[in-house]
Amino acid sequence: MRSYPVNSPEAAARIVALTMLADGHLSQNEFDVLHRGGGSATLGLEPDRLHDVLLALCEDLLHGAGLEWSQACKVDPHALSSLMAEIDEPGLRQRVLALCLQVAEADQHVSEGESLLLTQAVEQWGLQAHMFIERDAVPHERPRLHAG
Image (cartoon, rainbow, N blue to C red; front, top):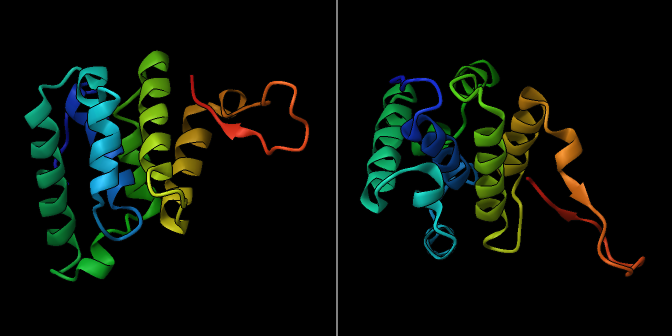
């Protein structure tokens, strides 16, 4: 797996791209959410650069999985920890997590792979306190995910 400079836009974009792939496929809804929400700008990337990072990630994952896509989307916890260690600035961590949450929720379903990736990010980055906020005065609704 290639490495990027710590806290670089590419390192941050790769975590978001991992979230896009965590359920085993790419979804147009995920791209749309990132585009509408200014995901590239949030990461400090030109819009086309996010696609470049995603393509490089796919190449790296396929190389490591022996060209079996079903296994390629699964990153072992140690490798994932190393990739997440490339982001150590607290504000950037919060922005990346917020984008990952938007991507994971884009199809109205958080898959097991997405959940594992989000949990790893929250735990490794120490963002547990930023994850939940209560809905305004509506006690019967479940808390919504929140980062930031």
